[in-house]
Image (cartoon, rainbow, N blue to C red; front, side, top):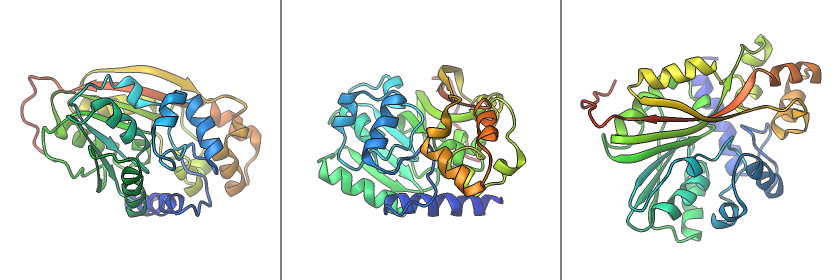
Length: 281
C-alpha cells in the first residue's frame, strides 16, 4: 500500500473504534471493556492503573505500559504519540501532577473528541489533546521532557521521520520510552500486503534491528531495550488474530508460524544535553 492509502486505512479503522463500529480488530484490540482490561493486565498495567483512568479511556489497544517505564516525576511535560482515547495520557497526568502537563497527539478526529470527553469526565485539567500526524508533530521544538507511545509507531509509514520528530520536540536531556511491535523475520507476502494485518499491527511492523537503527539515526543516545515479549504460540485466542484469520481466510498453522516472528518491545532513548539544536527535516 502507498503511504497515503495506509494513513487513510488506519484513520478510518480507528475512527470506527472511537465510534464503536469496529469491523477488523486493530492493534491488540478488543470488543469489550472486559477483554480490554484482560489484555491490559497481561501487558503490564496494574489494577490501580486500570481503575484510575476515566471509563472508556482504555480501549485495549496497547502492547506494553510505557508510563510505568518512563520514570515520570512531578512537573514533567509528557507527549503521547498516538494517544487514542487518552488512557496513557491520564496515567501520566496522575504522575506529573498539577505542575506538569500531558499532550496527546492523534490523527483521528473521532479519537481526539473521545479523549477530550474522557478528560472532561475525569476533570483532567493538565491534559491537552491535539489533532495531528506523528510524522509532523504539532508541538514546539525542545518543549517536552518525555515522549511515550504505545503500539502506534508501527502503524506509521515513515518511522524514521516519527523518531526525528520525537527528537526535535524533546528538551536536551529528555527521554523517549515506547512500546511497539517489531519483527524477528520477514512476514509472508499475503500478510505484508493485508489491510487487516496492517490494522492488527502486523504488516506495518519492521525488523527489530531496523527499528532500533531508526531511533539511533534520529539522534538518540543510550538506546536500549527495556524488555521484550514473544507472541505465544496459542495466539489464536487473541482478538486481533481472530479478526485477521477471518479477514484473510488463512490457516491457523500459518498464524502460529507468524507468531514466532513477532515480538513486543519496550525501548528507551535519550536526547543528549549536549545535542545541538535539531533542524526539522
